Amino acid sequence: MFLNLILRGFEHFGRYILLIRRSFTGFLRFKLYWELWTYESIQIGRDSLFLVAIISLFVGAVTTVQTAYQIVSPFIPKSTIGAIVSTSAILELAPTITSLVLAGRVGSSIASQIGSMRVSEQIDALEVMGINSATYLILPRLFGALVFFPVLVIYACFIIHIGGIIAGAITGAVNPTQFAIGARSFFEDFQITFMLIKAVTFGFIISTVSAYQGYYVRGGALEVGAASTRAVVVSCLMILVSDYILAQLLL
Amino acid sequence: MSYLRIEGISKWFGNQKVLHNISFTFRPGQVNMIIGPSGCGKTVLLKCIVGLIPPEEGRVFYGEVDFLRLNAEDRRSILQNLGMLFQSSALFDSMTVEENVAFPLRVFTKQTQKEIRDRVAYCLERVGLEGTQKKYPAQLSGGMKRRVGLARAIALNPQYLFCDEPNSGLDPLTARRIDELIRELTEEFHTTTVVVTHDLKSVIDMGQRILFLYEGRAEWQGEKNEMLCNYQSLPPNLLAFLQASGLLSKSFI
Image (cartoon, rainbow over all chains, first blue to last red; front, side, top):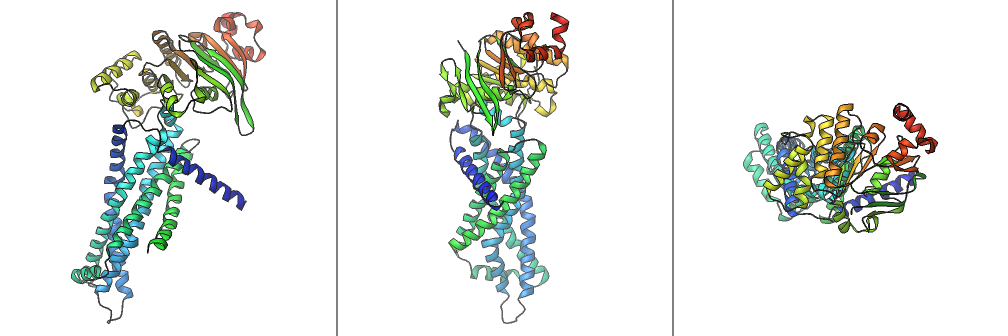
């Protein structure tokens, strides 16, 4: 039973790697992929802006209030709240929370779009025309994610800071000046590099894992729904595992 | 000449052998039909021929070219000479009718926008769907979707036309209209047309050369007239299949 599970895991991983490799072969004209990339980038980037803003605003506010709650000693300067919130936002909250949210929004959408194309024979139609369906369907989504995940994560990081400043000011826990002093005092350039590495890694995971789940769907609408759910679950797990590995390797 | 020949095609799904050593020559300028009861392997054979499912044994010759032995790049040049109408029409949901028909032209030709628009208009007119360019597949009926699928299949002037159950799920009038279209297009473009069906009315309407499959085996092959006129010499499974359709007893016995 356990051995079977491991073997199936290896089988999926092997098929996943082969699919990614196949999506980098058999290119047609550049203009075709450019159009698709533009469309996917809008889907991934622009359409996620509002959701990411709302979530980041509240994440920033809650983190500030809870940090203030834990710092009770009068010997600890108020600016420490800004330092903790800012460092957490850059290193963890902005890339990870944003990616988990996008795994739900973007990942499920990729899996269900490709899955629907599979069950309605649209992928077969592409193949019969001589078009490499993996390249056509996966590559634009992958590059859309690789370009726009870092943008969304930077945007989320900014909004988390705004949320923290607003919550600090409203509750009186920390004023904006103290928050900014704290945020700047512990800032290092590498934190931004680390955040962007995470964003690119998570973007890769979400787009490819979801595409894989959709691409190999067999059956009908029920299986497309199941693939979409699996895409979100597996993407979230992979994000958390790679989050730990990246922290261990790079910090 | 765009001959299509299959030799010794066998296919397994796990331990189950679904196609047993099937050989057949499809003639150009004719409607070649693969018939048989549901689940006999017709669609699997069709997908083996167009390369969607790789058979474990056998060869597929497009003209003199052994298709299954080609690399991806060479296969593409064969596939561009091939149009396929799917059972589900397989139109791209996110594209309009015009974009669907124009898709192979945009990908594989260097035609200008105007030339593509004109060609799309011609193909749509040919299938009787003028003025539907801006509609989406979701706004079309089943019969209209099939016709758009047919328009897309002929957009590149293919030498080979494949149709998988082209009239299943359609009302009798629309089904006959689709049959008529396939026959007309075959004659007009002199394509090697392969139609998979279990609808014997279609066989009567447009079939010329017939391959009868039963439980994955080629039980009979020959001309339509031979099948319908010399029915006494047919294998029992084909005879039962013809009789079950009600056509044989009415028209020919």
